[in-house]
Image 1: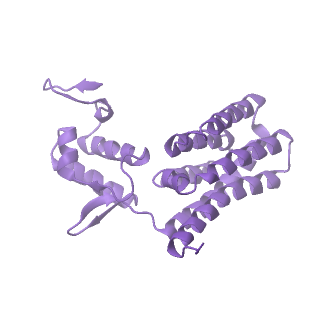
Image 2: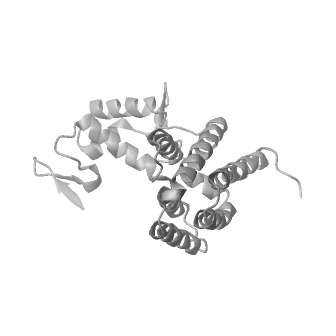
Image 3: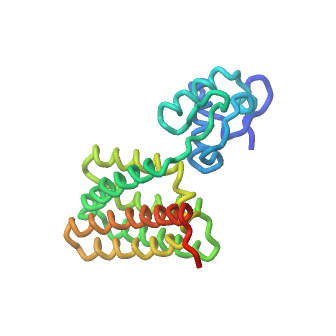
Length: 239
């Protein structure tokens, strides 16, 4: 699908935006969407001229968008290399996951007393869909469903500051989350089972601390699995 421009040409619908959107904002959104959905993976080279050509703009607004993404830590720029989607360092992954485990655990616990039977049923339906994807595993689709599941549980958090930190954590994780499940697909099976355990605790009216610790442990278990996988790559065990 394409969108007509004032010059009578067309451009991709994904590049179309609000009439008041500047060229720089449009370039930013265009690149950011592709980083978020995995089309531009970590290490992907961002060729300014190519992107400008796709958007039918000069390289100037694209360069401005790249600088904004660089300030957000999503893009790096090196002399003689150019711009590329930021590679995720192990320590950065560690710190992001540790922080998300804390704030998402707290948000889930604070939300739990207000969750309705309908919301719990919605979360369980999403988890059932996640379970059905395991036989023909698609990390990207699993990630989308995973966020949808957790959003049902944390979006009702009454503390806006904690909720903002959760959103920030998930936005950062979007850059690398697919690769996490690609590295350790077996973790996806455990994740679905842990989701059900969290729902059972909420339904049973468990203590807030117990729910928080379950949600936190769920997040750190993925961290542990990925770090163990990376350690194995560095120091493979002999048969």
